[in-house]
Length: 266
Ligand code: 5RP
Image (cartoon, rainbow, N blue to C red; front, side, top):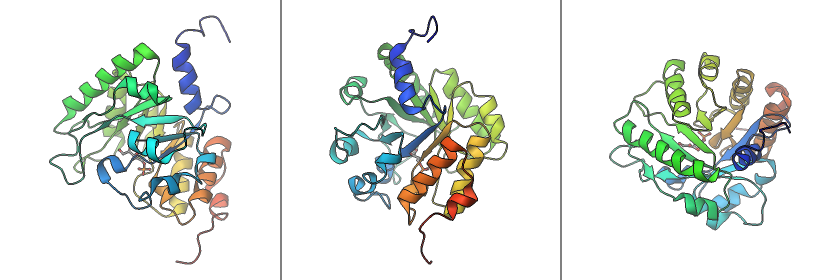
């Protein structure tokens, strides 16, 4: 510890629960999908899905409702609480999100960070960026890190130009971590973003490809993953999260780790 390191002690302490100081990397397990998708495939009974995966997750990203009802409060896993919502997959516009949880309640739930989506370029862009700014202002008072998720509307292209724009705006507004998608020229997204970047896995893809995605992302500068469907929708969810851990924290090779999965015959 050097002089000045006592500044923002709570903020640094909470970030170190998510981005592990020994490797500088993070394996976050995302199970917050129900906030706009309802009973997502693989998360119909969240508690049953989450329980076997918990020992391998550095942190768990989820909503207040699933946290209270499906996670044992005695489990030491750090929580990244989703605090935006108010939209649904069948609603008027997915980008129309609001803040759903007070910072006071997040503190009561002893979270390590809060997460919120921004929809840059969408109809409700301004509202979601205001949500982010309001949340950051409030969280700074208590030393709670804010993770911004760069949600991508159906009409948006997930390319480096767009994702750099969205990540950079999140960082400029004061987010502490940003979650985005992997894309071609991903180094550009990371290099132009002054805060740590984690990637979402996106829709379920073959396990081999999902492991390569995690490998490429950390190789190109991401501090880790905040992955959901490619873990819990796999035929071997525990095998997948263990393989992702090896890649993120130990630079494991995807091909070798893929062969260790118990995938059975298709
Ligand atoms: C949705 C989210 C989800 O957590 C997210 O997309 C997670 O994971 P995956 O894409 O890997 O299923 O933030 O906005």
